[in-house]
Structure formats: C-alpha cells, structure tokens
Image: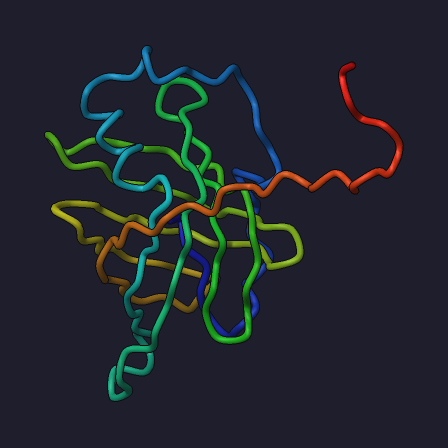
Length: 175
C-alpha cells in the first residue's frame, strides 16, 4: 500500500503527505460506488504477501514483504486511509497510511508521493495496482527504488474478546 522499503535513508524531501494526517469526513459504504465497495472488500482484512526488488541490486533475488490490511476507508474524493501493518526486514509497525486511489477502468491504483510515516521515515513514494487477487507496482524511498508484487490473501479478522466478569459470592439472584 503506499508501501515502505529501502535500507538507505531518504534525502531531505519536501513531504506532500503525513501518515498521521487525516482530513475530511469519511464516507459510509452506502455512498461508495460498486467498484469502490469491491476495492474495500478486496483489501479489508487482507494480507499482501509478496516480494520486492531493489533496482540497484538486480543480481539479487527478490526479498519477501508482507502488509496486513486491517481496514480501508474512503475519506473524500480520491483520498483514502489504509490501516496497515507494514512488515519487512526488521520492521513491523501498524500505521494509518493516507493514499490516493485512482482508477484505470475497473482497476484500482494506490498512490503515495513523498509520504512521511512517523517513526519509520520519509520520502516514500509508490504506485500499486490491484487486480484479480494480485498486486504489482513500484516503490521509491529516497534514491532507492524497485518493484513489488504478490497476492492478496484474505485472513479471518480477530474478534475482540469481551472481558469476563469475576464471579461473585454475593446473591446475584433476581428474587
């Protein structure tokens, strides 16, 4: 999803977006188009499980990546928030990622440009297409970039467990 990558720090970009920014009012499912509803259904509770390459290291095999999507919601226009857990290398962090979603016919493309993710870094840019249970795209972190691709897997969402009330010896009867 506007995905994070790269081992080198970014050069001081002028961030256009902040991962912590959320503006505008959110739209309910009833206000989404059929394509937008299908996009939410594809990503909500999904894992993007794939690999990424680094342009400068073409002789190396692609490395694994995994992004758990806890939720996705439209804010307004083409602005969306993807609630993601970003996992690659030693990184494993949950983060709300502000993205733009553009459409090529029936195919959604997530876009981020010079994204800053607090505690992770800045200068992240990406374009990722989704179609028929797969994703593919490009990523950039400063001067380091490459390709990313894989499959979209649905996972069962964990249901919150209600805390149990401690048993009492006092009369809990209704009589």
